Image 1 (cartoon, helix red, strand yellow):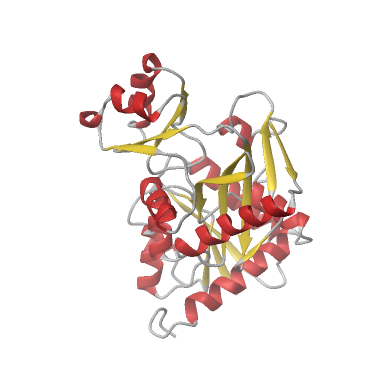
Image 2: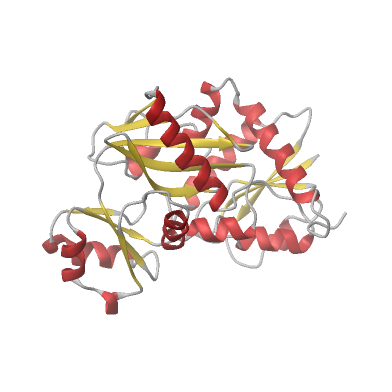
Length: 309
């Protein structure tokens, strides 16, 4: 099978995507796949680059990659691709829509505000929400543009910084607890990983991508708590229409999970959480990629009219 590993992209997560792509290329089984790196750097070039491949392995993150745009382009060309479809990708990329969907199916998520630019700025509204808050671009990932804010004096600069990365900003009430992530593969929950940043108060960009900056380990939870976490993760996955694989990030507060976001293309770097969770389940990286490719191919080609045969 001719696999095009699509990486780079146009978002703030370009470099992280390149890391994911390189790791994927290094672990694809050469006896099963002929892999070609496809680096995207500008709009309009993808269509020419993907001609001749049998399958697209997506290593993209952020806008024009994780938001349904590339997925739609590939579907229009009849090229199967890995991961979730257009709808799930688009919804999960938008944190406000994600949280609204989660609330609608009874999944707990921290209270929040959405501001569509500085015209919505209101220090009083944030005071009613309650400090501390997390200020983040509404669409984006890898903790880029995110700040923890503990007072009104810090709020304006944080909002302005977030708006440099997106045209809307999410202000989310900070919930304190045990941070964890739940990886899901083919609808099954993999071992849950607990996260503790070593040199910062929260799981920021440095903690995510630099060795030694975070302690990430498989955790065992009491049966009742584990059932709550499992239900929250799988309900989120299904509500957001995810397919093949995804990662659900949450905070455990007094034994109750609060879902923060759902990632349809979780990172696959050497320090990424999804491969660690898979390995804890006995799934090595080459096998993980193989399962993602095969399940995605089945998902893309099994629905009549979805991908031309």
